[in-house]
Amino acid sequence: MSDSTKPVRVRFAPSPTGRLHIGGARTALFNWAYARRRGGKFLLRIEDTDRERSTDEYERAILEGLRWLGINWDEGPDVGGPCAPYRQTERIDRHRAYAARLLEQGAAYACFCSSARLEELRQTQSARKEQQAYDRKCAGLSAAEVQARRAAGEQPVVRFRVPEGSTRFVDHVRGEVVFDNKEVDDWIMVRADGLPIYNFVVVCDDIDMGITHVFRGEEHLVNTPKQVLLYQALGEAVPEFGHLPLMLGSDGKKLSKRTGDTALQDYQERGYPKEAIVNFLCLQGWALNGTTEIFSTDELVAHFDIKDVTKAGAIFDLDKFQWMAGEYIRKDSIEHLADMCAPFVLRAGLATEALLQQRRAWYLDVVRGEQERIRTYGELPARIAYCFAKDDAVVYEPDAEKNARKQAAAVETLGAYRSWLADSLGRGLSTAELREGTKAWVGARGLKMPALFQPLRCALTGHAGGPDLFDVIALLGGESALARIDAALSRLASKPATEGAQGPD
RNA sequence: GGCCCCAUCGUCUAGCCCGGCCUAGGACACCAGGUUUUCAUCCUGGCGACAGGGGUUCGAAUCCCCUUGGGGUCACCA
Image (cartoon, rainbow, N blue to C red; front, side, top):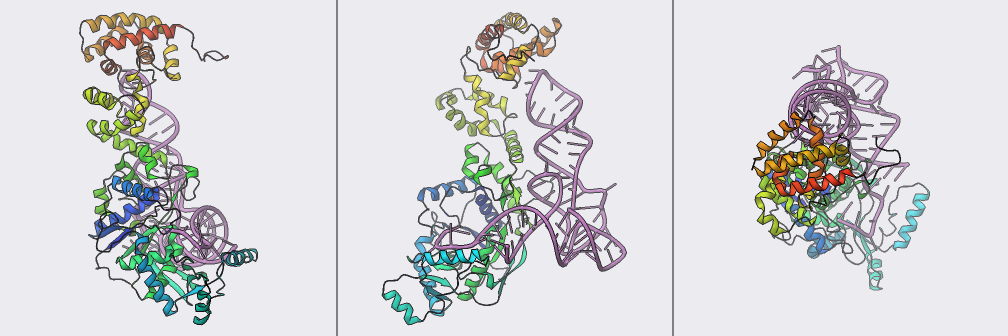
């Protein structure tokens, strides 16, 4: 096999026919980590040979997504490199040269069969429960006949002539894999319109770019014999392979939109910290040591080895992902967390950028109050909306209102407390003094804490849970707090709007 | 269906390559307590797996075979 002392060159080769798949992001991450660990090069190549579906926009989005995750490449379409260009359609001359060489050697042949004939062939094979494969009708065409039909205007595809025997290769995650060549179809390398196909192009480019290791998703495992055979026909060194286990949806099948978000961008837009995304993706098919769950990309690079990648597919566990996102949020600094959340706050229409800047210290306090309660940046706006609400229009969550109303004499208690609070505020008590004073007030009246705190929380925030109420009062300001209590006094005095026929529980 | 890949708690995994240290470890989720003005965080405890069957061996989660189950793939897509 190939020389293991040779400098490592690996690549990630996405197709710009859609947004970056979360599984693709993991593939890129593992390739990148392998290159960094081994002191090799990581290249990015755009596989845009499907001209129907490839777009510049997707290509841009994929590059942005990778960069956002912190994956950098040594060579690629935007940064160039010694093997430029890095966009496959721009390398078509090279592909044509390889095709001509293969044709000349007889390792490939022109095939004039129409799509209709092939479709019919497939149908009959399928009806007879036979293996679906090309029947090699054109495999024996003479050079003269090919030339004549070409001259007559017929445009053939180019097929690879699969030799007898079997094809084996060592897969770094699975071990040795063997295919009987009888199972490998005489696959199409070049379309009738002259444009080459993925399985062909990928080998040409990997050869030209000196790729030493090919790590990709398991769905490519069955393509590998075709590619190995091609390397051999070309007399080139076969790279080492490693097929990563698939990322599965909750249904146990290849992750698809049916069972959840599949694009990296989806998670970005939901406000998952990128460090959490990287960390979680690593855990899908790899483990640092079996006990460490939280680790950085530096630690990944320091420990990653393709041999340690798991063989079985991994079901994408959103619960664990959310837990991990929360871990990253909790250990973040307030300043950074506030900055990361800001776009979500703006998008929710709670505040303007100018306001967040003017009241920076206040905004930081607001974020601080929720840090241990949110798991993604995207969860913040709904939790802090009350801070931006009008005092007489705080939205009461059903649970919050229920908790408030189930306290006996909630309105009376709140009303009495309002006077105490107004008085205390007037005397300029600190947050800590207010907190202790309130507890003493509750105790003096022989009440349980919830008797006051539940209605008060509902009045101030409309939520059933949240930060310490005296921190909330500090956030809102005394005037606003009193106004909210006044509003609650009348709102809680009337019957609940949503009372059901069964009556209260 | 053919071919290929895979198989440890519900989920992600450690252990498997180089059999004994495994009465199988960690994490998420779940359940029960504790802390707290609530929610959350945090702490403690619990539940919970080597798919089945044959071998090999003094000894198997670890090696071999079969069965079963799951997945991938069978395009002039990638």
